[in-house]
Length: 265
Image 1 (cartoon, rainbow, N blue to C red):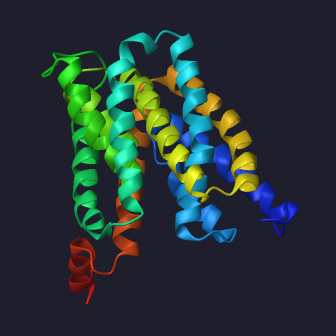
Image 2 (image 1 turned 135 degrees about the vertical axis):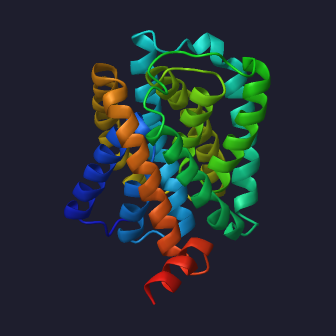
């Protein structure tokens, strides 16, 4: 990493800034930061590890910003943090040994479903609604599952968390986004610890992008609080569909990829 030029470091800073802004509102910042790290010369595992290192600064900044404005009570999130950390630790350990091909097949369908849920439910997420699970079983189920997913694979985790908070706990969109940042930080930080211990984190690009994340996440969180659902919902739908398109495009064996090829051939 000593060979990184000032120009490349500048682009990494910008990627961290934009990624932090997008991620603090709708998730999906990894779509910007991971490709930027790979273009800088990092191998896929090092890029994933370094992405976790820089992303946790953005999710932490967004968490603090939302908490200070009263959109999330960190004391109420202890079970969410505990279960998400456990799930993320398991996922981070397993990604180093198992193939993630099954994820690339299933996740696009789930992301499309999430996007459609928000797109065709115009009143969804504007106000708090009835919850279908109490918080403890909710965090046990989704904390373990989505924590594992974020440690093992990652794309779309923020979208899935926001969907779960809105659909299952009945949170409004801003409240769901604020709570999502807490569990995002938890899984990012947990994964970072395991990756750092294994020696995969590249510290120079991580530090440069972390500075960008600090500014971008604060700006994004303030934008979300100022404009609410009008900004969060369309950005969430857009990010979900972009992640889907990237996953499908990158995997020629994906079912959707094959269907598209048949339609255009």
